[in-house]
Length: 362
Image (cartoon, rainbow, N blue to C red; front, side):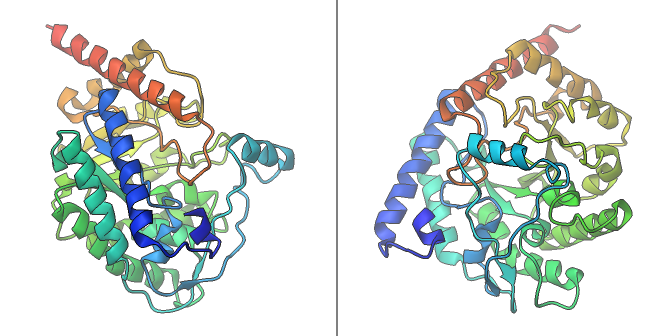
């Protein structure tokens, strides 16, 4: 993947697919070994969770320099230290939209689905036990600028219509679709930092409208969405408060909502969920382990976090999750892979403790 990103493809698709397929089987097996109920392919075929779409959509080219996040901008030395701790700088290309958009990623998508199905079968799971990530329409536009469409609204709508192909193929293969949506929170201080809060919220609301339209033919129960403020260990003192964006998030079609709830910037926001009017068909997937720290959470702490959400919506509507992915960019990540699986094992143990506590309740 790194060679292809630098324009140095090996030209051997069979070898590439074999390597990715083996990696997917490995990560699914590891997830099952630690006791996870719902597994993913680890996004092993994607250079990043967001910019991979440049290889699946027409109209993208170039490499646009990115601005530092608002919370990190004043701290040059901190940015250098964080890059070194994570394993290096982000060297992937951030292409911009330069022309009409259509979906041409069927070969890559078909390979991804086949790899996950083979790994699920080998682990003795059902396809419904697995989810596959895909970039939401808004996420694509938050990372890749627009130099073609007259308005941002036209741009994100074109992306949504094209990505509909990928969304439906994932569900048609029997898997759950996870839409990654940091555009609804993180993008306020990153990709859309030129907007003020009110302008950003209007944009986020339109992104949800586009997401809903792109998934209009999919059962909401087969979709989950991930809300994120940025998977990096920075100050995060520019993070938009959950209370501002939650009404927009709850208007989205996906039944399950994944969100940060373990890190010290957002752990307190369980109170926001407690005060919100949550539709009865929504399932909450709070992050109960952090994704940027090598601390291994104690299962009792995980159980305590989960109990807050069980008290809000009931045990049948809570799934234990992670704040974010452990390696959202290929080759870059602060958490040691072996420690990541220890943290996932703590998640499982904590969920078991929380479930036992519910069963013991009168």
